[in-house]
Image (cartoon, rainbow, N blue to C red):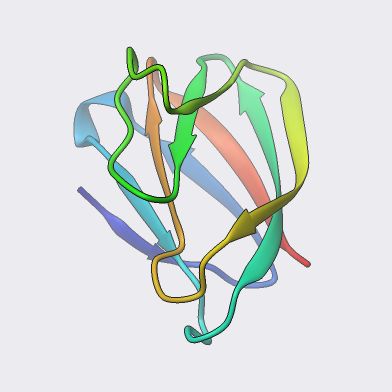
Length: 94
């Protein structure tokens, strides 16, 4: 389960067999908003309050070639992501 410290802009390869990626902020302590783009080819599942799974109904599903803007994330916990298949995401801190 890799821990990734985000920069203002980041492109991250997500490997399905690596488990949950924990995306953390460089300056924890206050809530942030992020823009998240799934570059594909697999779907990713996002959750802040717990580790997501690919069949968790409480995880936000982001299919390939889709984006979500202004996703709220707690400064101390960040965002947790898992992929159904190997994929790449692009993240922008706002």
